Amino acid sequence: MNYPQIQFSDRKSEIDLDQLQQLFNLSAFWAQGRSIEDLSIAITNSDPVISLWDGDKLVGFARATSDGIYRATIWDVVIHPEYRGRGLGSKLVETVLSHPRMRWVERVYLMTTHQQEFYKKIGFQSNTSTTMVLHNQPNLDSLPSGEIQLQESLGG
Picture 1 (cartoon, one colour):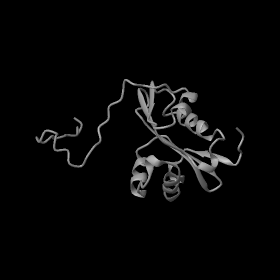
Picture 2 (picture 1 turned 180 degrees about the vertical axis):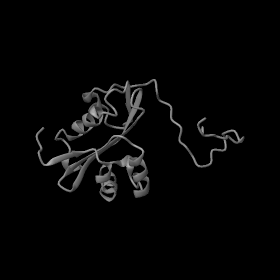
Picture 3 (picture 1 turned 60 degrees about the vertical axis):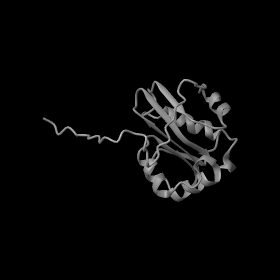
């Protein structure tokens, strides 16, 4: 792969949220209709965040969350349809994995609906042992009704 015009960036401040929203709407069925506000929150709470640029056009994106040592999850890997098939997706995931925040993590997880073969080529394996999910709803009436008080340590 040799595309000198494509630039990789790990600077969150460079991400144009309008372009990111358009990229998701065009390229990712699982990310349709995400709001600018929600995208901003997701980016703020992720590290690393990697974007791919062809000049001033956003053509790829991925982000991760991690504790830096034990576990990490890769999220929102997307390449613009016009740029697929050039090895950019693999390079994007490899860039996330080689980031200092991810480099020493024991296990890296991701979720995919249709791209299992793509991720297997990078080294990911199917995992049937961690298949639980909680769909957090605003009105979780099934949780205990007692109040939980959290206290911050004030030092001392």
